[in-house]
Amino acid sequence: MRWFRADLHIHSVLSPCGGLEMAPHDLVKRLQECKIDWFAITDHNTMANCPAYAAVAKDAGLFFSWGVEIQTSEEIHLLAYFDSPSQAQEFDTKLYNSLLPLENDAEYFGDQVVIDENENILRVEQRALINSSLWDLSQTAKTIMAYGGFAVPAHIDAGVNSIISQLGFMPEEPAFELFGVTAGLDMQDWRVRQPYFTKRSLIKASDAHYLADIGSGYSELYLAEASVAELQKAALGADGRHIKN
Image: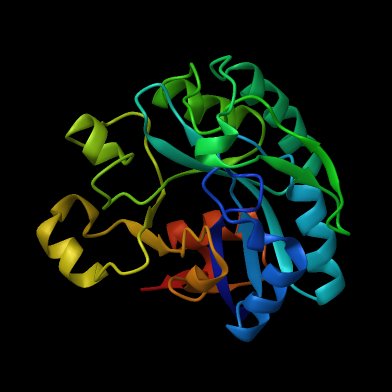
């Protein structure tokens, strides 16, 4: 068991709203400067860049998890994390087929580039990744689970694209074990103002779209290893695992 400093909500050059400076080698260097040893790439509605970032992370001695930030049909952002790259890729194909068939406006949003670990551009994704899946919140959560993933509502305290902002309340189903919060949130104050979260686990991340965002938000976790299975145990406070808030 040991402590990990984790930022599990970071965008790559593939996210249409992300900066091209978020290439893997510069990103890993910035993470090392901030003493963050575990990270996940969570691009909008795709995991196509995870292989490149996983390879660079491994070479640098950092821990990496496959992730994605899905926009549901209600425009709720839901994070999904996977330990198995093969299951992640199967899920990614299914997710891609659920996206609205709209083309990306590169002049407005920027290019969506898929790269390799040497930062060569493999292709430019033409489908707009910034839009919603046809799946609603419930279907999205169930599909994540069916592929061995762990679903975490993103930036639950945000004024847009959170469960609360989009629905106005926390539904009983689907039930979640962990909730993401924004980098600057005072979690103790939030729990006072939002009693629903008093005894629920929260995890802070940067939601970085630019290198300067790295280090603005992270969490410290006490785990046996840097894995999604261990993250889920920490969310439940199981077997001595926990998240420092």
